[in-house]
Length: 169
Image 1: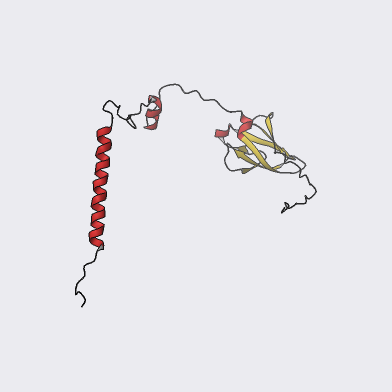
Image 2: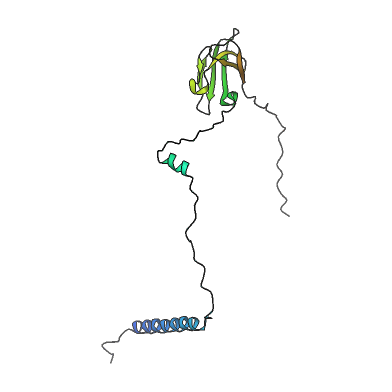
């Protein structure tokens, strides 16, 4: 005759293992806690307050204040502010030059036209030639400087190299 009801064994076995594990963990914790030396220094504090030096003029400028201190700015060399990227010229020195001012995208400028406006110093494109453009101050005939297009290195053709496969030995 078979028993009508047989209870499962795994719930009581699992509960027993969990209780014995908790008892063992408690014994290990308190054992380590009680055997630790009493004169041990506490661990150092992590992330204390940081000391930051504040520049009051920069902070006031950031918050919208106006500085009363005289500001000394250095102006870069005028020729270094311009980059000549292209030239379309005829034999009479007339044409168009593609010039980038202060690192901005390049724009075309005609001979006789103002290059960059007042912020660029009021220069005028005086003439263009093959791979060059001459700029001068507005209202003067003397050229201030000449921009040259960057030279590209010539391509060097090398003989094709034969690839060798490593030996399988």
